[in-house]
Image 1 (cartoon, rainbow, N blue to C red):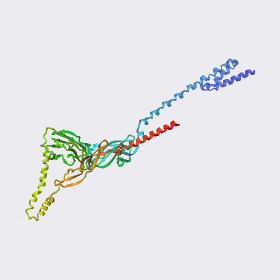
Image 2: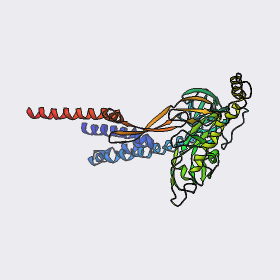
Image 3: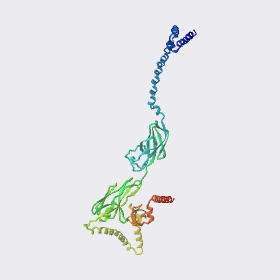
Image 4: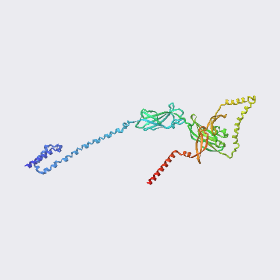
Length: 469
């Protein structure tokens, strides 16, 4: 009897567990309805097989698969659908916000490679911008009236204003308080209203350069009776003439006066770069020709002289040519005899006043004479001067030579000198001693060679000591 009661209590407990289980509650079954089968099955409950049905009743695992049904959280993967933040990349697509924080440029530096020089072309001046995050735009020159100069025009002797315009790179702007520098010196600077452009300006006074030789005339060998042309060019030159210089350097005359010395010869000068000499005579052999360039404000520059070399024609008669120069001194002697007529009137008066009239007559021409000194230098081996037809000299001074070594042979150096004032040329030979030879070697090589020799000696000595050890 006790066993039966125990079984009934056990079944009741199992039934209560089933009724109040979460699965039963989840299915919404009526607990009272479910209790009836458990109560009716009480008699059969003694059959242990009925107890074995508990596993069937405990199909809770299958029922608990509902959590799998509760995969709705997976359906709530809508956050993945809410990838709208990617759509919110619109700020990245609109660069406006990133471009707003422009960087400020507080300094701009520009460079002008060439200042204005009289006769220099405006287009030969170039400017650059050396500041980071800024670039060159333009270079403009303005005259006194503020007119922009065309690129093909040339500078004159006046003051000009230069303007270099720069542009700020993307992402940058020029500060309203921008500091401008031109060739590392402070300059006037203005900034555009939008800060994208800056203009650096300064006034310049055009410089005056003496003519600068670009090409000296070259030597030519001419057949007697033929013609020859010489060419020389220079920068900053306004005019060109040519001079003839005698072999001894004592006589210098302008090419326009060639017929006074070489009667059968003539020449043409284009005033720019060329001279052509016609009917070159034997007497010209050894003479020198040089170009004389004139520039702004009476500046003068002479080219190196070139020697005229003439191939003598053996078939040409010489006696007729040589007397001509010999006869030329005779007319010059006539003026020396001209004073004799002045002596003839003096004997006519009483012999006592004879000295007085002669003094008066000789002094009168001197007092009435106005000297006209030649612009061409007259020279000798020692001095140069400007001479008047009357024989008076002006500006006489000793030559100021600039010597250059042309060649060195067997210890003897040949030097050529050109007078810095008149262009007179001379040559000399100088004995070259050891000191002179050493002076021709750059000091850097001497020092470098000495240091190298010392280094070699130190290395050799170190090797010897190492071997001894």
